[in-house]
Image 1 (cartoon, rainbow, N blue to C red):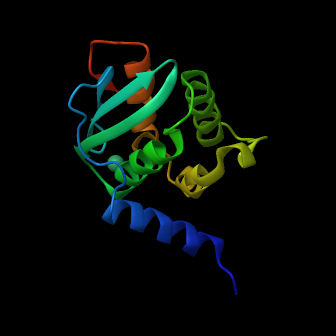
Image 2: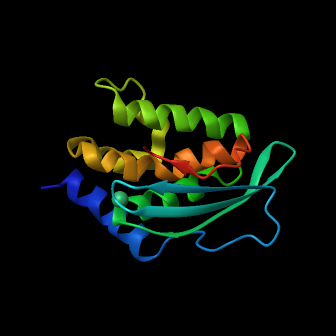
Length: 148
Ligand code: ZN
């Protein structure tokens, strides 16, 4: 039997073990820090935005498997996207995790692997931390973001 849950878990384990785009950018155009006190997840996010397009995005930090995998997937999916597309994805992803109904799961692409955390409400903040940091970076918030 093909088990979707197992597949999703494998993707998360893989991204946690080998996070994509892990590290810092030497001269980021945008930067933000995020912290999830509930779990202790911490992230530093660097972006290089050129002409409204995310040219490069990197993250560094430490946290649980969900937060690391989510950040890794986010950097992978956002490279080459416009800021508007990134904000749109943030909204879809956030809605999908926090609302009862999700109309547009297909729009999430690879991010759908994280939908399993819906069954564990305490972990939703782990999955959205990187996205909150992204939102703060794009809006040039100087304060580190907290999921609380
Ligand atoms: Zn966590």
